Amino acid sequence: MHRMDSSPPAVALVPFEPARTDELIRLWRAAFEHGVGIVDPHPFSAHRAYLEREVLPGHAVWMALLDERLAGFVAASADSVAQLHVRVDLHRRGIGSLLLDHAKARSAGSLWLYTFARNRIARAFYARQGFVEVEHGFEPTWQLDDVKLEWKTPA
Image (cartoon, rainbow, N blue to C red; front, side, top):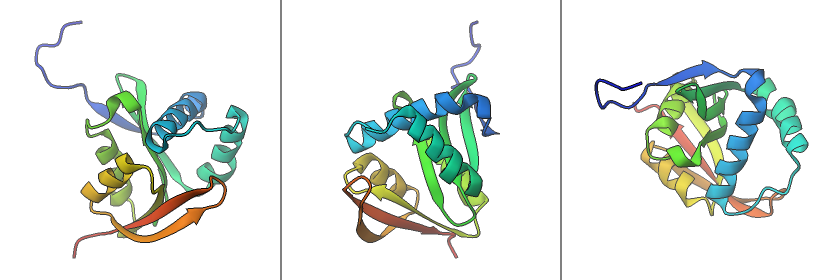
């Protein structure tokens, strides 16, 4: 089909659909590996169990769809962002900003999150989105330095 204009296709935000679990995990793993620079050693089944046990119960998960394909997702509560990932080939197109703005709009007025210190892509993105680095620590499961960031609604 030929488009009459040159505008990019619209991104639709939709609630998590369990039928897209495998697609979401594949995107998550690829984005993580790209940003952090390591291969995720956990089996796919462990990633699925983590999603089902840790992420879904306490967070609203919203997916960004571009032409019906999963382009990214955010898992957030009223006070934190547990996960935010965008398909690697779609970085710098506003999808992460759209997802994060969605989480901000549903927040209690502030959000906190963690990212790995070596993930310069994520750190630069969150800085552009108004997040401030407030704490540096160490994540024992991954054996990597991490960074806690916070955002507050402008007064």
